[in-house]
Length: 84
Image (cartoon, rainbow, N blue to C red):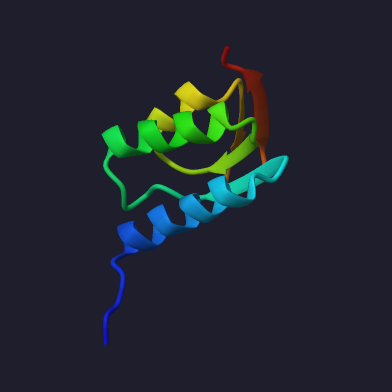
């Protein structure tokens, strides 16, 4: 039985996103198994397609593709700030 790797699964999900072109996409660790070069290319494609994004992730490389950052701490504190 053929099984896709986590990175292949993430690429497939992004391909489906680009095919369906919703107005808004919420991506939760959508590129955590993809290298940053490929991540950059995929996010550029998503943004160029006109899809608005909300991303949940830990990589600082994601900041490049967003204009607002919401940080939530374990104790419930949070901060919302413009980054562009």
